[in-house]
Image 1 (tube, one colour):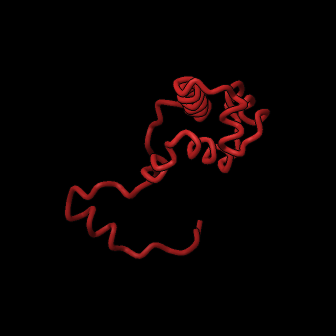
Image 2: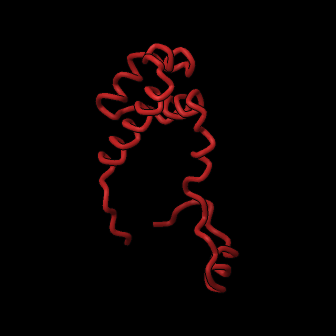
Length: 99
C-alpha cells in the first residue's frame, strides 16, 4: 500500500485553487468562464468555494481554459524500468474484479 501525503480534500482544494488562478490570469469573471465552458455560474462558484464539482463539469472547465490535454497524462501505466516491469505489463488483466 502506498502512503499518501495529501488527502482527497487537500487535492480538491488545490485543483479548485488552480482553476480559479487560471481564470483570474485570463482576467475572466466567473460568468465568462461559465459561458465559455457550459458550466453554470453556480456550479463554478461552488467549486471555487467548496471544491465540489462533477467530473464532467471539471473537464468542461479545463477545456475552456485550454488545459484539457493535461488530463490525458493521469493514470498512465508506470514507466518500464526493468524486465519485471515489462513482464507485468504483458500480463492479461481480468475484465472484472474477483475479490
